Structure formats: C-alpha cells, structure tokens
Image (cartoon, rainbow over all chains, first blue to last red; front, side):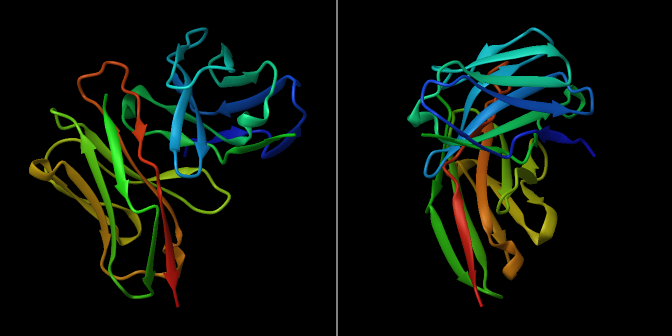
Length: 113
Length: 115
C-alpha cells in the first residue's frame, strides 16, 4: 500500500515564525496535494503539484508556499505564521493509474501562538 | 463552481440502527463522487466511489451509497451501525469538466454511535 508520511504530527509555533510541513510518499506518485482541515469547513485545497517543480494554487493559497524538488517530497511553507493558520494540515498523493483516488497522510496539527 | 453539501454536521444513531449520511452536489454534469472516512487522529481513507456504471456502489465496512442524478445526491448508508463506525465522514466530488481533477470536499459529518 502507498504510504504518505507527514513527519510532524503536532507542532506549536509562535506568530511570525517560518514553518515547514513535510510530506513524503513512497509510490512514485506524480500528483501531491496540501489541504487544510477546519471544523465545519471540511477540507480546503491550499496547493497541489502535478510533478516535480510544478505547482498550482488551490482555493486558499494566501499565506502559504510550497516546494517540490523531488518527486517523493512535497513541502508546505508558512513564511510568517499567524494565529489564523492554526489548523490541521493534510497531505495527499495520487497516481495517474488511479486518477481519482487520493491517499492521505495522518495529518499535522499546527498551533500558532 | 462545483460545491458539495453535507446535511447535518453531527449525526447520532444507536448501535444496530440504520446509518444515513446525506450528500448533495451542485453540477449540471454528474461528477465523480466519493465518500472518505476519518477516524480519530488519522488521515482520510476512501470508503467508496462512483465514476460510471452501476449507481449503487458498495464500499468497505458494509457501507454503500447510491448516485441519484435526478436528486443530485450521493447519500451514504449502512444497515446496522457498529461502535467502530464512529468517525467523521466526508463527501467529495471531482468535476469531470475540469481538467485539473481537483477534489472538492463537503463540510464533513461527525457520526456518533450510542451503545
């Protein structure tokens, strides 16, 4: 089975800090996604990447950037964390051979104080 | 823009009772439809999906969903709830007309099972 690993399950940061959230998948998937999950709002797409060095904005990209230098790794960056970025962040990947099915990581819960 | 509405942010049923979680989508063209489940402290996992073909779709753990084009609905059901079904459930769509194939999620429904 595909594994999507988010290295940090829980993080606590201060306002203004730079935050890196890392996601690694082990099945050579081309597509990778970052979602934000908030109660009552479901999952909202922040950024996605079709392939290495390719990225596209999702529905709520403001305050975030991403990096995809290697196929297996997709990083979400908060340049200057703010309290309204306190949330659960979910990474997912997808194979072109199973275009419609996303495999999710366990999530990274970020608290910004 | 494509949207997904899940009716009821919280649903509570007794163990052994029918589970019904509602999902409606807005689209003039039937999209691909999914249900995902999220157990506490875990990521999402696929329960079932509809792309084409038979409108009644069976998934894991005894769940099934029926695509009804006339009602733009994709409700999730299970005949008899188990305590282990307590989780949050998300309906999602991929609009077929969009090349990006991005998943759009509903707001989620938290299912509680009473002993």
